[in-house]
Image 1: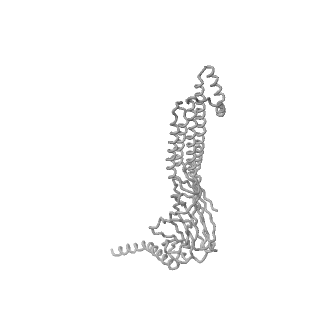
Image 2: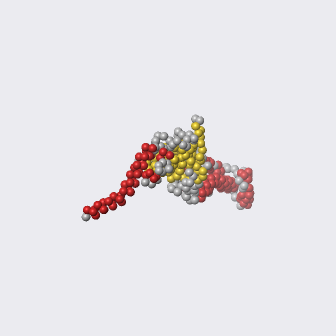
Image 3: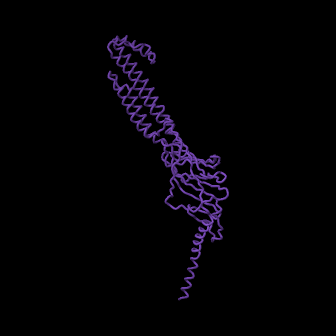
Length: 414
């Protein structure tokens, strides 16, 4: 019985010995690397840092404060001979992990960064180290960067921002950046307002105080999705303007009381002013450029204003028709409005029928007022419809370009 127990005990020790040995080797390897490696000193040779950037999500673009925030996944790789080992000395271990605080890390920063949030701040961040000294440091982060915003074509504007990556303290002779272009954006999560149009990488260098520094720029080009602004702002504006013009020049009645036309025009202008307050809250603020949408609203307000003002001469002509002692309309007025045949027919008909001169005068002034109504209605409806059609066509082209919301992107390396 004792012999059987001893046999089982020895067998159990043999089964667990490899596991204990493996974990013991990892601990020994970590201790070996920390003794061999100096975490405050860079490698002796030229350090080539390979950076792979993956855009995960465009969080926000703040036009007023000229900045963009985006979530990116960064992978940095470099060789450090002081972190290499012989796998045979540690039971064949070819990779291990160490805390980021325990090793030397290149001082890679984003120069145009306004804010940086490490999404793993409350989590221990290990770096993977291979036996040949290759170090892989990966982390997700939320960057807020400075970005020049152009809003002249709002809401059909395109913006381009870049992450300017460089070393803070090392020159190009010591640290060289090499940004990967193999990224396919497979984890990209689309933004509701912005469509990703293009992503490309530019590797350059710049000189600062006589020192040449290696630099890489990760460009992000986006285009705005305008459907929300067209539906909520442009279409209501056009409806108000079109109905106002139709009401100003509609021939529903030939009665003498027509002052309500001017009242309608003033009410329409006030409605446009209230709607413009809503627009000002949604449109980005800038003193450099006037957005296209603001130009559209101003143009529509001007059109309705002129349409309202020009109802006064028509109202005057209509009153002249019923005015005591009114004179016959001048012939040049009919010719100017292409109504030469009209006045000739009126005169012949009334002369043949022995109609009183008063009725002839009334008919003449009423015809002029009617022709002006039709002419001004056509002109102002055209003026208010033409820019609206342009905006709707631009929106349609933008939707086709975006493939109805599916983001189009392209990656290239300069």
